[in-house]
Length: 80
Image 1 (cartoon, one colour):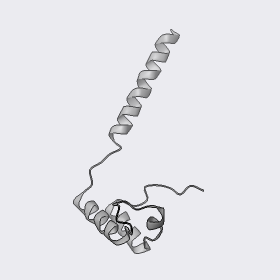
Image 2 (cartoon, rainbow, N blue to C red):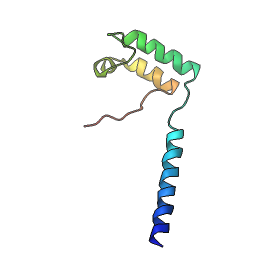
Image 3 (tube, one colour):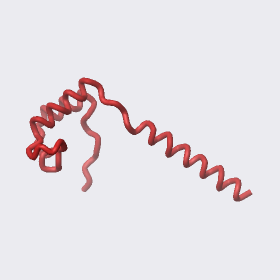
Image 4 (cartoon, rainbow, N blue to C red):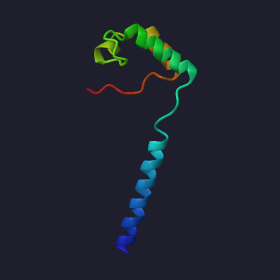
């Protein structure tokens, strides 16, 4: 009986993890791609194609609002 419960619980966990991973990556819309490209051109000082911590800190409130409108802003919460 214990083996059955452990097996059933394991299957539920594996299914849950698989479903969450599948919904994690979503394709960007054209508007999102355009907003992201503009942001990189404007703030990517070292031209590596990514915004590091210092570059992200320099993003203006207007640009943050544009990103949020496009559905790209507010992905991570700040850790204290």
